[in-house]
Image: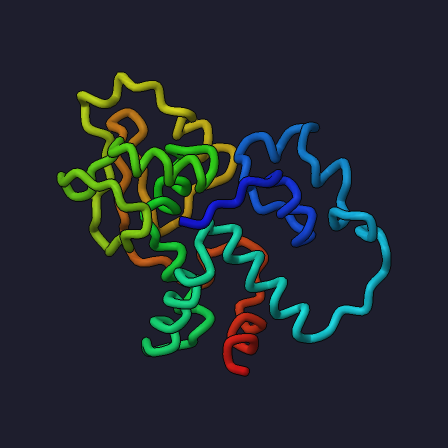
Length: 208
């Protein structure tokens, strides 16, 4: 499986926005994007004329890196979104938002999506009472995500209540921090995704 082994802070600088790849570190003075808010490399500060294609490509790469999916995975999500009813761009973002690792992150059980993906793979959570270790599972309305009692002794990387107080909880999710349980109240809508994304550029890119 492909893996990015270079500095993750370079990705934020390349896309010109905080991707929150390192979680809480992105809120501290150690954040590389705050110290060097320009593209990495020798010509990072140079003014460049950006073509329409470059804008579309950068938007696609930004979204792909925010949710931590590979190119083939992302293209598969777009194909499904294009075939589904409704607006393709909205369907794509909603599909990405429904990923299990993203839900773990949104519920505050992890400081980043990468950390959430690792926790899911280690089998820390159950989905509707069943063990699950696949981060790409798409949740449905009514699904219940929980940390089993025998695994609660394992120190969670982050306190869910504190994390939610800092970054907020989407309206389509519900959390019971004392019971280590989260519930999907409804499927997410486009208005629930506050991340600055222009999905129309991605649709234009794949429509060529």
